[in-house]
Image (tube, rainbow, N blue to C red):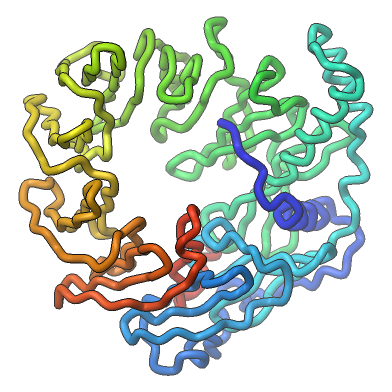
Length: 486
């Protein structure tokens, strides 16, 4: 699973700061009061900003360096004074699980944890040059000794491991609640390790000590296990040194994952709480051969032999899509997780899956039509014109679909009944309100609100930023207590 390194300086500052805290290096870090994490002050910064506001409120970027609080229900918009620093914040990534804390880089020496409830900084980290412990020369030497057949010049190899180290520093995530962060710390001149940092106590715990640099990690759906990837060269065409591990956060045990000899530049991910999916040879669309690894027995078995265009998890089954571009056909196969094919259907068109619907079927878009596939009977029913947007409400009771002509329909959960709704402009993106009472939709340079109860729509704000290719940089903020650990 490959990542593009965006906004490298900003994120590197964040991670480097956390590394400083994790290594307990000399710093001027202020320790937060326990109340700042568990029960923020009753003084509410955003409530004071918009006195009559009610939830939900949206923190949204409206210009290159401008962020505002939007009260959708009252249609109030107010600039918010965030900590001064780099203005390109990744709001969704940096927001805490409860939605009340945010990470903000201030400058090249400091990053803060900021409470949106109190308007105060509850934690400050200072950078102390922790990356000086890493040696690109020694790491390159270790890579060459471990893999003598690497076709790198000495200079290119040192550059490669340096880039891998830099990418390793970019890894950080909130973990379970507002108290813990998963970050990367330097072990020695050639290794980095995954670390659990406790914001409340200011202490850290190194979770693993396997050799190599942390390239990536993914938390299991139940939050109890971590799929860890380590190596020395994080290069899309050099995967031989990559090692995968299963890490149990509770007892700190770590188990190496053994990949079959047929695997080549694999894509590995959490398929469910109990299993890990392995695409043996990923392609731009789909891949070749797919296996499931049982995390209890640590044994894997081949589920999908050969090529596939896409695969999707359903209730206890697996749906695979197989396109034949030359014949302009698409074959759908429903499989048991053992690999046995239980249903198959061919469509004389090139199709792809928009969404799995309630685990009972799927919405399929083809060149000129879209279809509903029922998994039990594997019957195909025409839907409407090909769909480009499918969005389910948080409560699961309403679906909005938008076709290629930007016409919108509201549907019941199974898509059995739909009715058209008139939306102004051309909707490009949907953002549901947390209470499912309506949704926001982004059009070119405008943001609208549609209310389900009244079937009314209103323009909320305009911004040239919304004409950009990227999605909204916006998050719903929360005024409840932070979700710290018990």
